[in-house]
Image (cartoon, rainbow, N blue to C red; front, top):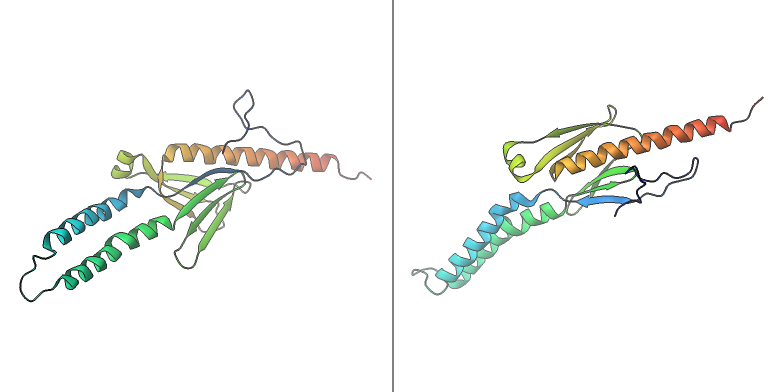
Length: 184
């Protein structure tokens, strides 16, 4: 989703004092490169199971092979995929939300109006994949870490823009509220 843009390239701002609706800017998950090992395990597991099915040495039966393959499938493929799937990052026009958890959900938020520092860390492999880890810290709450963010430079620029726009709106609304205040 995108916001309407003026000629200067900045998002259109609501009139002073008007409530702006919260719009979705981005929803993403961490980069799935860690699932490469799960994909390789899945291919090897199916290949080995197909090869050994019906060709097992004496003392072993096919149900044992299928049970071991099923256990490896759950532990090595399904669980890592569900863990990756359970972590979601959302950027809106008002805040950044990090959600995680398979059974019980854990949710952390940081608002743009309050302002925060943005730290981007990129390792060698993250640079190759275009990813990075973003840490948001406002000096009061515990830092919010967005791990393995794909297209990290675009997300960084978006966060900087949202902080700027929200602080301009908050300052403008504070100025208009003080101008229209009661006079004695």
